[in-house]
Amino acid sequence: MPTDHPASPSAKVEPLRKTRPCPECGRPSERSHYPFCSDRCRNVDLNRWLSGSYAIPAAEEPDPDADERGTL
Image (cartoon, rainbow, N blue to C red; front, side, top):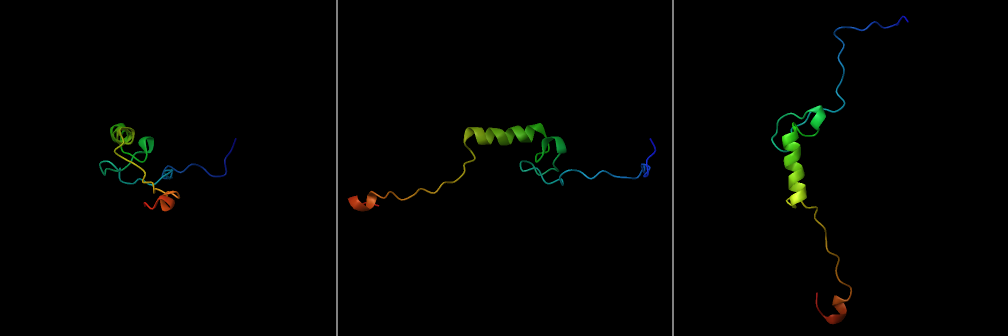
């Protein structure tokens, strides 16, 4: 089956995502471990989430009953 556009040996395939610094060590990220550079950095980050080192801050809502009791 003939093609209209022959493949050029100098043609480049653009990566799906731009490389960016690894959030753990700063080295360029790898496609297979994105946004990390390696399995090690990915696992270090996962361990921090699982151990509670990272936390998403939550704002406490004021207690509506506290005004009636005179405490804040």
